[in-house]
Image: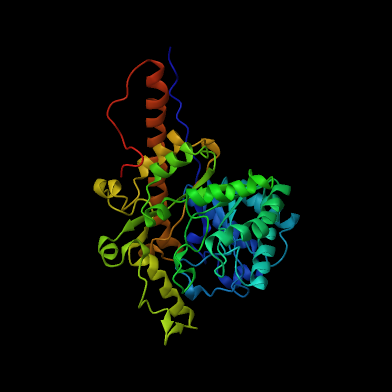
Length: 412
């Protein structure tokens, strides 16, 4: 008996926050959808299959100044005005002309903000994002859950049930998934908290999903997995995926951010995996500084021990892979196929660019950087797909053993 060699590849995309001002602010404010058209053209040059369309409150409306952010967001999708049928038709024409699709819309914000007025504003914007996703035929919205900083983590579960579940019901009514990214967002507050997004790891994902199941929105809550956050918290991708499978939740992951992390062992030696806890510069005279630039120093909880990697920009380092000090990209893509319940051809692989020295914001300078990274990500996925098809399908069908041991979950 034989099985054909038929590897399946993931569609490759890019988050449009990689180049925030591709379209100058004065031009895009006057003609908001020009930013999407120009990003689709740019993505075509990058050989991308898709974009993850970045949405955010307009800078004039946001409660968080860009100076306080580690990785400023982009409102490529401008929703100050409703995204109506005419706007959708214009974007769909650009999609058809470029051949670049829209994987989903990304809006990354604290949906459990402790200020009721601020929370209401963010929820209202999220509903506008949902409506835009429907208008564009996108299957999902990607974002955070967030955290109410006035409550304990257990109390946040109740807050999630009361406040976030209604958003998921709105997503269900529109036929959408909500894919949570698991960044713990340590620098979101000048306080001591490290986990400022309660959906930061498999244990919390499962707890949240059980709440969702009780309210009939279990199919709406999914995970957009980002391995950089696993490295930040001392985890490895294969073990995370194995845990999800062991617990019966291998279906939760339906998308990926391709972003790495490189651990600074000297920083870990100084501060441990909780990052810098004092003398960061975000507090002045015994209280949180009112200056957003000072508040950004809260991100030392993360940046003292690691730096984001744009895939392909970090050296090949087998020892670091085994020590979880950087992402083993080949095993990441193998483990996804071996352990998760994925619809491979419809699972987006989205390059998210947050490597600080390479965050150049000039189009022609960024083009070869992103193009090289995306080519690397595509080839890694193709290599993993070929290995998986050969080792898990072709060889077993003929009773031929696979050689060697490979990486094992829960050992590194």
